[in-house]
Image (cartoon, rainbow, N blue to C red; front, side, top):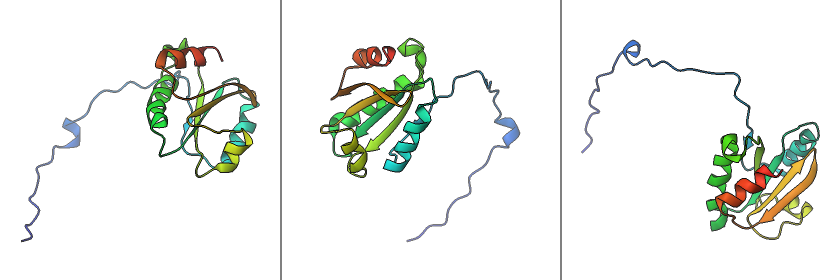
Length: 141
């Protein structure tokens, strides 16, 4: 039996207001998920003119360590205070969808994280690292 939707009382918007403080002095952090090979190449070109390192997380949907690493990386990128004030950009690349990008950098295991500075490969690691090691990796870029 189909029942009619009951009406719900609504609260006027003017009674539900909260005060929010916005600041334009916060650093802009860039995170882009599941990029294509073309977009990845474009981001590497942009990184040549940037002072911020670019972390590239090569992952696969079926990879359990990848699913564990991703939230840790996102948390560290979103909160530079946790990594000694180091600001970085983060891009994720699905190796099953973008085999060309993975082959270009000889990614053979997941997760693989590459760090680029000024468009050049600066550092990398393979596998799941504990958070203190990830912090150290980012701080040393």
